[in-house]
Length: 385
Image (cartoon, rainbow, N blue to C red; front, side, top):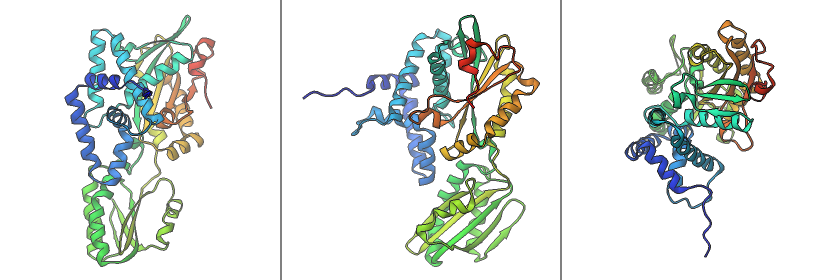
């Protein structure tokens, strides 16, 4: 019987893990497994945030189905890392190994390296030669791209959308998971359908989870319906929709609301939380541009800031893009003296990295830069919207 070869190199995946370090990789997988066991919402967030690592690990095992496009992309990434490691000088190898260590410990992910390699691949496809100047030579920028006599420096950076939110999604997932068993116990003695609205003027992050957790339980066990201070307003009401219509709550509360449903045989309780202001993800991007522009680029050549906006979902990203919020904040930055060495800003998300058919990024050219109209640089800097 003829065995079909898999659409990736299994030995290459093992070589990638060896590059990271077998023990370090095992510790990382154990940590991700522990996070996935803390609750369904944290598990979902972990699978999303660490999709690359988990895909590589699945492919190293016995996969009883054809690999998905995203898994094949992860395998290609691992192969590209190995190829890059073979081309770097000794100090470049050390920098790459340190980047892999950072990516597989603590809050790190493989996304920054993926973003770097994808940016390099896009520029090659546009006709540029690409040097990994950051890894190879310790330059403050990551890539040096050239087309004939024209060259540009590219600094790749990742900014989390959480930097623009008062109510952090990661903190909400942890809060909802830790409340779940207590809410089920409460429902046993309070049958029916309930809605607990949380208005959080000061937001929610990992440092304030415990306080809000205790306040929710205090409200429920005291049989009160309302509690408030300057940091939170809690209100418990009957839920006016049937269980089958819970999806309509998203429309009622808006796209920025955080919803969580705890159901039991005796009923359900919906938690609906909103912060004290609208999310400012695009503004967080602009602030990051100001932070990195002077430090990441030499200024002798045109500079491109290639930004990856992490911790967004498709609905949020498409909203930011379609409402031109990203364009507005990027152009705000480009109109300032801090951007005089910047010829373009590009923006991408996981939608561009993983979605089939998405091959580019948002690009915003700085018309005031002296090289803005150079035909040789146009494929990398011409505005996409």
